[in-house]
Length: 198
Picture (cartoon, rainbow, N blue to C red):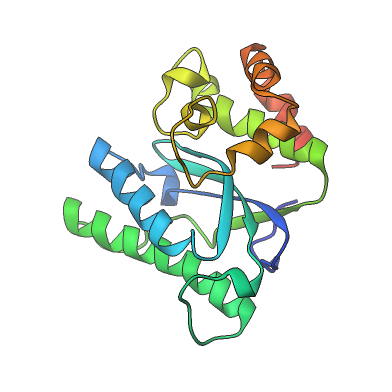
């Protein structure tokens, strides 16, 4: 099971996710999604590589690999583990502060300490990517992942420059054609959730 106390260690892959407190919306309009992604790039890109992500109205999922400390960009002080956790904390606190100011609210926005699950094999990585990209389909926001603008799917099938580790993702699926093939299949998301132990 995911454990909010699992340490985020360099070189490891993690499934990171959370939702709004009492399942409240985290994103109400386009600007919210854009602001979160801007803050994500500011705080998380220095310490982690991103392989897949999705932002839903009241929750999000991320697939990241923590960089080795020598790869941390422009970060000083704190030991490695505290530095990594501080970057995630900075992201969530900065977003909550901006959201509360925008909507004249106070208090927590996220339900609890963000959940994280260590990923130790390639099969899990592939299933998690399918799960992340099909989340909007499961929640009936669209009929295919390519139709949803707030996930990494469109970036995966694009040729535009990106920080997303697209080549690695394509390698796990062998090639882009196979990546698209698996995303075109009907996904039983509850079965994947059980398999992923979410």
